[in-house]
Length: 73
Image 1 (cartoon, one colour):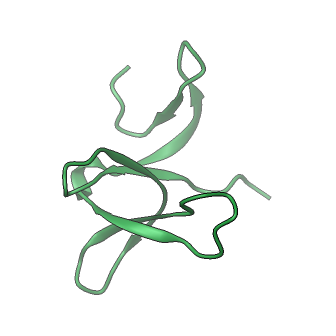
Image 2 (cartoon, helix red, strand yellow; image 1 turned 60 degrees about the vertical axis):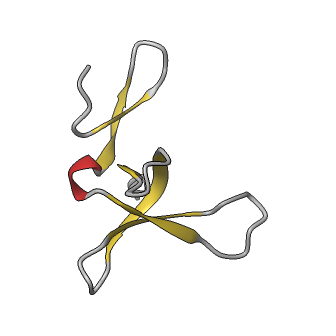
């Protein structure tokens, strides 16, 4: 069994990055779903810019930071 896929994307409202699971909805919007806090019973989402979406790689940066596809290192 492989690791689960994790994505990140830049929110279209300009309020930063969001990390979670990527879905493209029927209207063509790119969404990242995430669990807002550990005890939450459901996920929430933010619409993100398609060009900013990157999937988590198996690599770590110099200081142990996760590296996503498309990162410039």
